[in-house]
View 1: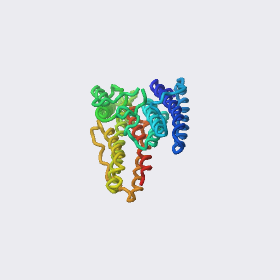
View 2: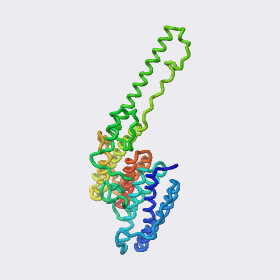
View 3: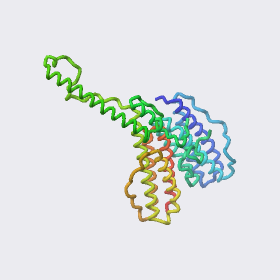
View 4: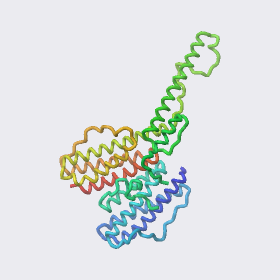
Length: 150
Length: 222
């Protein structure tokens, strides 16, 4: 089943965001401390799985999957455990935005997967932060800057 | 490419333009069904079809009357089916009109679900004033969802009926809210596959928010 150019582009963007999340959770895991270390590992594993799924999806759509960068610039200086938690929440928030862009241009099973991945990202962000700061996660036009990074 | 929703210019104004030209012109839009133009297009397509069906039955009756009056002609081969036979093939109702009507229904149902959730929060806060402070932020999120689903609708979400009574135990009351949020979110995830793109995107965001609210409520359970 072939998708549109829009779907391929949005899928690549989600894959790129998952690459960044996998890298970022490496940093999170290193700094977060014991209490929440298990959550970080679980998230890291989940994002690798999502990355692998998107990699296959891009190929199914006829594209060449975007590669991970060797390193990513972190959005802020992470420092200690609190910074690691904030980084984790930020990674999930950006992923939610990327999946929000994919949902409208995908159909059928691929749309369902994108929506489920978006839900997982938002739930994880809420777990990290202890709150849901944005009533419309992933939708930049509703304010609060939940959209994917440009 | 994500398109920003500019305030004051609802997507449905595109469909309103199409309805003016007649639904059979096959107006294509980027989706975003809803009230206004979409509904007008769907109703006018339906009306055109019904009229066309009525129009076909008149010539059929005329054929029968003519054959009765002139039996010599009755045996002439004809491809016209008997008047009592199957109805004429309905005119094709444009896919977009059907899709617009069903998207409208989906949006309205989502608004009703948010309205029901809101009523549940209010009933819970009434029954358990000590919880009201904790529940405020959750309730406000649901209220903003309802507003987003209701905007550009010509009709209000509609009466939901009396709110379910909150359980007497505060912990169970919060669990009931968490369950309701999760169920609503799950339904939206299931429904969005069939929605037009922008509505699907909105439902995905609401479902994600609802799933997060469910999780947080469970954590906040007294």
